[in-house]
Amino acid sequence: MNHTTTNNVAILFGGQSSEHDATCRSFAYLYERITTVGLREDLIVTHIIYLDRTGQAVVSNYDPSKEAASYQTDGDHVSLFKAFELISDKSLFAYGVFYGQNGEDGRIQGLADFFSIRSNFGGLLSCALSISKYHLNQYVRGNFENISVPKTLHITDTKETEKLLNTFKGKEIVVKPNSLGSSIMTEKFLYSEETADAVADLISKILEFDTAALVQEYILGVEHSCACLEKDGEVLEMPAMRIETPNNFFGQKEKFIAGHSKEIIVEPKDETPQVAIARHAAHAMFTDLEFRNAVRFDFIINETGIYFLEANPLPGILKGSILPQMLRTKGWDVENLVAITFDNEQAQKKLKTDFSFEINV
Image (tube, rainbow, N blue to C red; front, side, top):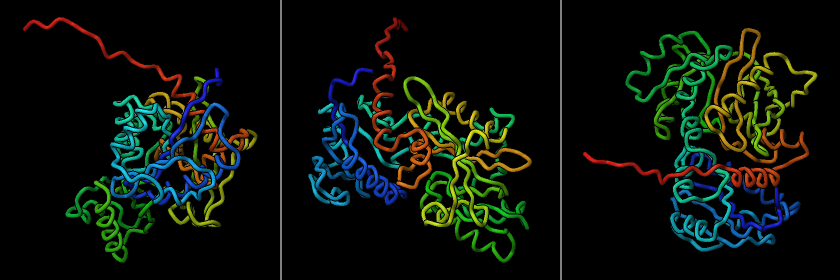
C-alpha cells in the first residue's frame, strides 16, 4: 500500500457512556505511545477531541507537550455536531477511543457512515447487534452447533423478577447489564432466600442504566478471549488468551485492579482442540456479522463444552488490556492499530446509492 501521501488524524475519546472513565484511561495510554513512539510517517495527529458526559465536545489542536488529561478542559467547547462537522470538513480520519453507549452501539457508526467520515468506529450492524449480549447470544445459539450459550433470563421489569428467578434457586448465577461493558455491575451469587434481596436490588440498579438486566447460569470453567484483526484484506485470528482468577470469575475488580487476574497467551503448542474451535468460531462471527478492524470474543471453556459470552467490537486499549497484549505477540502495539484501521478504511468498498427505476402508479 502506498504511504507517501500524508493523512490527518483526529483522536476522539470520552463520550456519554457508563464506560467514560475507561475510555479516558485508554486514551491516556494511546497518547503516551503516540507522543513517545509516534505513528506511521504518513499519519499525522492534528486534533484531539474530548466528548464529555453531557454530549458536548472539547476540540484541541494536538500538542505533544500537553498532558493527556488537559484535553478534557483545554480547547474549544463546541457541540457534538460541530465537532463532527470539523472532522468532515477537514477530511480527518477519526480514531475513536470509546465504548458502550454512544460509542460501540451503532449510533456513532451510523453517524459516521451517513456523513462519509473515515473512522475506526466499525460497522453499524455488528455494533448494534453485539451491544445486546442477549440478542447476540441468540444468533450464536442458532448458528453454531459446537458452541453453547448459558441459560439466560432477559429482565426488563422488576415486577416479575422473583417469579422468573425461581428456576435458579440453589444455583450459582451471574447478574449483569445487557448492554454495558467493562463488567460494570456484574456480580456472581448463589441464589437463595438469603441472597434474593441483593439480587433484586442489583437488577433494579442495572435497570437505572440499561434497558435490560441478564441473569445467567454460572458456568464453571476457564475464560478465554479470542480476537480477530482485519489487516491487508484478511481476517487474522490472534492468539487466544486464557484468563485465570482465584474465584473463577472475571468481573470488574478482576479486570481493572492489578493482581486479581492472570492473563496468559495460549501458545500454539499449548492450544487445546476446544480453544481452536473457539478461535475459528470468532473468525466466523467476525466475517458473517461484518465486524471491522479488531474485535474480541469471550468464551468459557470447560470439560463439557464451549460457552459463548459476548463480543467487544471496540476492545479496550489500556496498557494491560487483553487486545494490546495480543498485539504485542506480533510486535505491534496500539499505535500500530491506528495505522491498521486507517488502511482498512481506505480499502473499504463504497457502495453505490444512485440506483434509479421507473415508478408509474
